[in-house]
Amino acid sequence: MDLNVGCDAMTSLTSSVPEIEFWFEFASNYSYLSVMRIEGEAKRHGVRILWRPFLLGPIFRDLGMETSPFVLQKEKGVYVWQDMERQCRKYGLRWKRPSTFPRLSVLAARVAALGAEQPWMADYCRRVMELNFALDKDINSLAFYLSSSAVHNPVHNRFLVINSQPGINRLDLSADFLTTHPKCGE
Image (cartoon, rainbow, N blue to C red; front, side, top):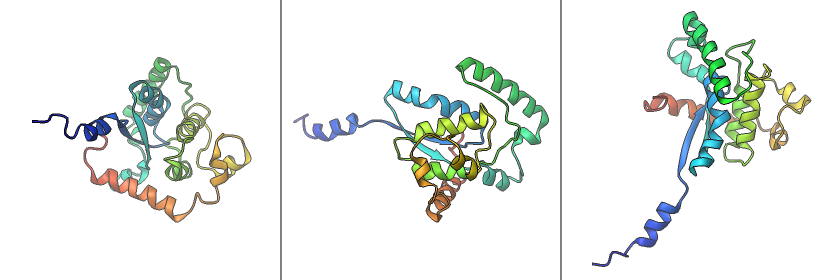
């Protein structure tokens, strides 16, 4: 029996870089903790990140909620803000409780959906999260993105297509995927 048969195929399968699908929401405080740290961990473990932005708002509405459970359940909200201070201190992340929570994040998510495979994606996501959770800035304002140097990456050249139907559909597909796949979020 020749044990070398198929070794080339096996080698190419095992030499490919492992991937992780990373689903995140720019308005989510716990996504902030993850976005700010995932790239370092992925590099440390040799894993490629597949960036998957989505919107929690439609999921909350499907569950009969008009806003975040952290807002609806006061005790949970108090705990979450204390936990965020602890976690940010633990990981050395800047933190400023947003004056608006949850903050609308459709614009940021559309850019991310369109640029998910781009080399600037990680930098873009970290910067948007910092704007929201360290600098308390509106991340859903086109005027803000265009009038400042808030987001330093090639995204500035793509604002003409941000509101395009393909970008919107890509986000819709993300929300649909999450609500139809019970393993997500477990």
